[in-house]
Image (cartoon, rainbow, N blue to C red):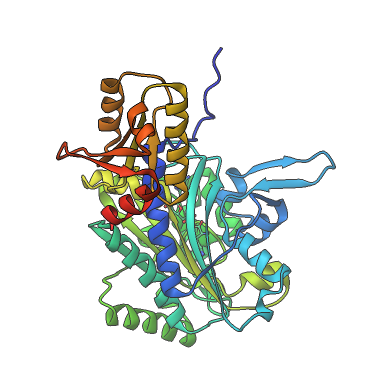
Length: 421
Ligand code: HAM
């Protein structure tokens, strides 16, 4: 039986990776503009990191983790997200000692054992930002502006920002109580998972996608009615900042997100045209997470976007990223073995000079070589036959014009670079 890729995973083929690279380049350029530096953490971590960080009661920890025991009996988990891991690394490597504020980004695979469907995979890729050390709402504003502007620069339309505040450890207990009181009479109408959520963390009830549960939670109390003065002011300020940079938002008082670590700001961006998995990114503030993981408290805010969903969203809008492998010059060696060796050496020399160069190494007719040159899309072919070698040069052929010029070998790289400039 042939072996195929595991369910919920993808092979990214060259015509896709070149587009991914273009997106990654835009993201990395934007990180430079905003002052974020890259961090790379392991793909697997101690299971406790996610149980404690993401939250014992979340679907991610309860149902979706790839957890295994290694040969010495440690419980390890393929990272389902990266915020908890970046916090661990920030604390473990004492990055807080570098400066008061530390701004990090990452790109890489995440793993969740979810039911695969359009836009939902078991191995998927996230780009994310984590901004440590700034409690001011301007940090929240910066994160949201980055995400919004990124999609705009990509050309994505119909982007909707959903915004909420989930309060803090001061004001949330009263809200939890209000939620418990609200849901208590409906307990026997809730799904099995929600009955468990009711006991563990009633906030999670708001995140259930079951129709009956959603109907019941539609009239549940709103967290924004329970915010303490500080949280209310923080939320107001985030909204003022978004208005100042012309980013429209829709307040969504029941947006709690699928992870337990959020405090104050929580947000998602959705593109409705891509179907059920419409969230292209999500994030928020998580001022309590560092203390939970490392014992050292530190305000922080961040977001992550799904790389795969960028392409789904662009395709749904009939947009695509123009990125193609470029070939500057196609080299053709024709004639004796030593002539073809010369062509090989010239190709290497041109590549060393930074020219994107292709050559078909097989011994073929000129016609077959010219066909390959055309297919490559190179605007220039360099033809080397026995006569050219004797004369110490090559023929440079402009593909569009069909014209040909003899150029001495020594002058060739400079000649071609001049043409490109
Ligand atoms: P999240 O909402 O779980 O947040 O994931 C962020 C994004 O990753 C989603 O909006 C979606 O685009 C993409 N995504 C999630 N699961 C899948 C999947 N199974 N298949 C394809 N794409 C998926 C987080 O992970 C937080 N760590 C974000 C964050 C960073 N909060 C603060 N800092």
